[in-house]
Length: 158
Image 1: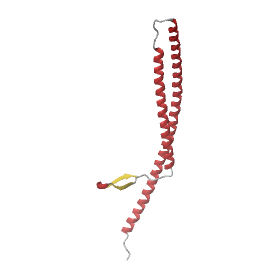
Image 2: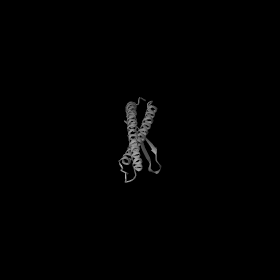
Image 3: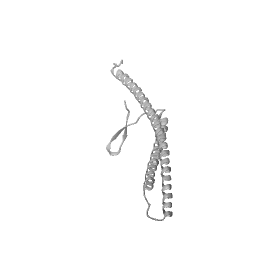
């Protein structure tokens, strides 16, 4: 059973919110969630880098595919051929950058999955512990109410 706490909320009267009981696992859960957030940020960064690498690759491929030859002297054609060779080299470098960015992205995705799984397991464990605490509180409260009702029913011996 959940515990609801009344709070004063100005002119509206009472407002009730749920306040879970504190457990010894709370600091550990907080640390795991921080690690999960850091892993998620790293995943976002690596995804951005991967997208940038794909964009750069598309641009270099477009430059390499462009035909800039025109009728000119042999020296101009030689420069154009050297430029095309350089563009193909840039494409290879861009492909390598995409490959390394993909590896980094995969590693950060795996790291995030591990961090998320660990945090989720601790959150579930904490939820179970909170349920146990609430059940114990309810049991104690029921016993107290039973004792109180027994005292009220007992005839006074005076």
